[in-house]
Length: 506
Ligand SMILES: *Cc1c(COP(=O)(O)O)cnc(C)c1O
Image 1: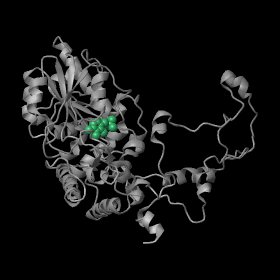
Image 2: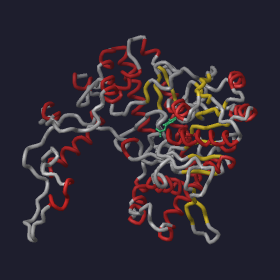
Image 3: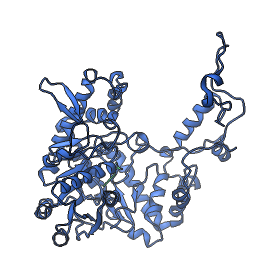
Image 4: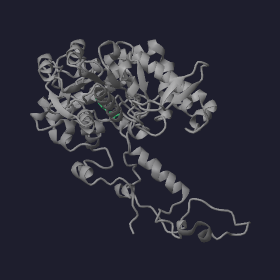
């Protein structure tokens, strides 16, 4: 193997590599402004000039605000070049566990761009908004059918925002019963947003230890659930990718104490079309349209975190709620005295509703069920083909994702973060690193249904090859990635002193 092949094992799949005629230095130059350059040209003025300063008063500015000065093609090249430094689901598998980075179907985008939908204004008069209201209504209906719940709000803009909305519903309901209660139980495998949500809604967080299978310890639950428990926030399947078999007993224990069961529905990609949380005792839950329902995730677009609940929580839903009149038309109802109020401007990220509905209708019930089965099959295929080289801390059956640990590689001084960075050289986005917290050195892998067996095999080959490198040449892995324009960044500085926007150098 020549040196280049060793460091760049899969050249076909490496992205953003420096072209031969570019020096590394040229590529990294970011500041490209030249004084006086323009990206536009105006025709000569053929009407009398107006005095802008007089017209605009204080709002008039004379300088260009220190904006960069470039020609049109320089701007195009700048942004296009930056986009090639990045990784995306449209370039290859994105096995970021818990995030369900599935393909964003193009049909969603076509539908969302229909001018009558894309240009709809939230203040459009009711009679002109019936079409988009019907879309919202139909999505609500589909999501209720999928979850087995009774009522829903589409307002929250993310999963974490949905959690907050859901726990505010729990709080409002307990208050209506005379006591908001004091604490929320959260398993030690939970996503960090769960305790943050409970705390922001004014509850004390009580940790619930998982049992040896990664599930809820029923005895511990029975001991800890009491008359001051507002709810348990449970992720099902859990962040270990394990389905909670005792879910109905868990719901019974909570309900016996007057507490509610909140389900973090981020992992619904393992359940859609198979089982419904409303049928196994869940009182309130959120969905992530940007995970399960194929709308763009992260930098690709705004999120959407609908909250579905049982009928007794409905009076507390955010305003406005969508109602259907006897004549079949729809209207927004604001007069809801028990509502927790608004959680977001207008009606939520409506463009995402259109995409999610397009995805649901394009698949239909059978397609959605098939999606779930394929997602689970893909995760188990990876599990089977990697479990001889990576440690599998929980042997319980996997659903849509599988969690390994770096135990064997750590013996050679290589950690999960190093393996993840090396994966970049093989042309893949890293899996989720060091989460869930109950697995030391976790490698959390979620392929989703989008991947073909060929892509899964490439990923498995990469992971096996890295395991081999760890034994033969650990330094190679510990200094990865070798194929990117920048290698290891200062992650502490990035978190403590983030540079979030370009600023002119004066
Ligand atoms: C993604 C995720 C969340 C948070 O959802 P966001 O949309 O990112 O706010 C909560 N819980 C779990 C288990 C998740 O995977």
